[in-house]
Length: 171
Image (cartoon, rainbow, N blue to C red):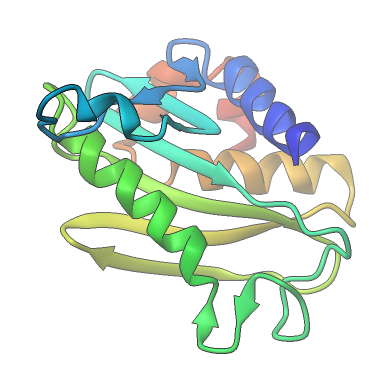
């Protein structure tokens, strides 16, 4: 999982050079009494992409068989893995309370070598995507898909000003 996270983070750093990219500690939007706040677990994103007008949290999920079909592990008996959605929604909800983060979006991203998934939801006011990246294809196709995934929804002007020139040509 760490290798996939590092790949996504490195890709974003190279292709979105004006963005701040990295892991982010998500503070709890909570009040603890008598020191109880120290008992709250740490929340840290896999990849956060920050720009003045756009903030995105990407949680990377890697499955050993590369599967994202119903026979794989992206799904559980009731649909998408609930634990992964709960984790992402916790990050989004608590991070939204921070100044400048009211419109933060989120994505669960997993590699696949079988079948692509691409779902979009609005959950608790957050735009949330559940997507896969097919690694069983030529590099240019992987690059184009990942650039699309990471920049979808940006204003066209933002695309041009915040992506590297090579990445813009790929758009």
